[in-house]
Image 1: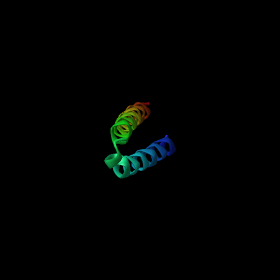
Image 2: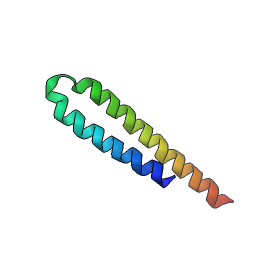
Image 3: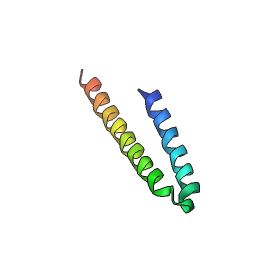
Image 4: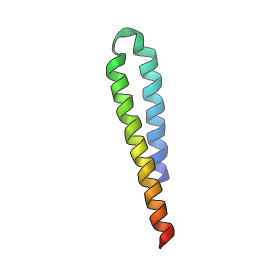
Length: 59
């Protein structure tokens, strides 16, 4: 579970740096949309992890 979390975080960081460097070339809007999508996926993973760990603690 932590491994998924970590690799997603790395992907988001990479996407952000790429979109930052390409932003001035007009391709930035597409990349920004992609990185926003990745960020929301990452938040979903975090929320799922939190929910799962709560469930495990109850049992």
